[in-house]
Amino acid sequence: MPRLAGVLCALFATACALSTEPRLRYEGRSAIVATSPTIVDAVVTVRNTGSATANIPTPICPLGVAVYATPERSGEPLWRSGTDECISTLPILPPIAIAPGDYYDFTARAILPTTLSGQRVFLTMSVPSVQPVPVGQLLVK
Image (tube, rainbow, N blue to C red):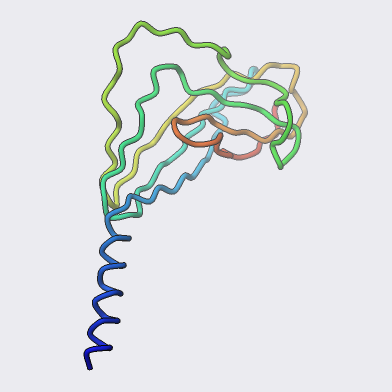
């Protein structure tokens, strides 16, 4: 019986330790909102599936969309929205707090260049604290 109590106590302690961590899940999607030129709205939803609040840095610069030729989205993108550099004089902003079970949507709008017309492309969106997130594919009109 003492051995069973020790095992149960260890399991309980492990469960408590694991339950205090935020766990974030990133899901991307996009939609064409206009054609000629093609305008895309991209959204990355960050869900906290853990049991502690997660704090994500607030982006100071606009979030970017990148366009790739292949589904693997590797190598250099065909095109990127925005600029590579962002200079801001804003003070440090407070983080975005995502409570357990809650979510936050990062959004970006991109006007795709006409040089991509007729191509099937694969999109990613950059969000704070994670690699670019796939947000879908589309045929550029």
